Length: 135
Image (cartoon, rainbow, N blue to C red):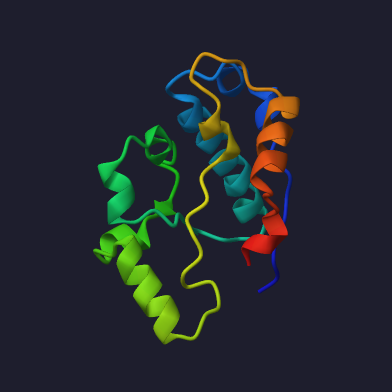
C-alpha cells in the first residue's frame, strides 16, 4: 500500500480561523471529509483514527467529527491507552516509542484569537517543530 500525503486547508475554514471552542471539530470534519473522498476514489471502505482511551478523558470536540463516516476507533475498541501503545511500540523495537505526543499547533493560540498562517508559523518556529522529525 502506498503512502498518501495531501495538504489540508484549515486556514480556509472560517470556524477554524475564528478559533472558538469547537475549532478542532471543524478542522477534523473537513479533514475526514477530504480523507473520505480519497478513500472512496481508492475503493477503501473504512478509515481509522488513532484516538485512544486517554483521549476520551480530555476535551476533544474533534472526536465527534467523524460520526457516521465509517471511521474506526480501533485503539479505543481494544481498550488501549497511551501507555499501552508506548509499551507495544517499545516491544516491537519502534524508534518512536517514547516520543512525546504532538498537539495541533492551533492549541497554543487562545480561543477567540483568530488563527493566521503567520501565527501558526510563529508557534512552529518557537517550538522547533518539524513534521518530518516526528518519525
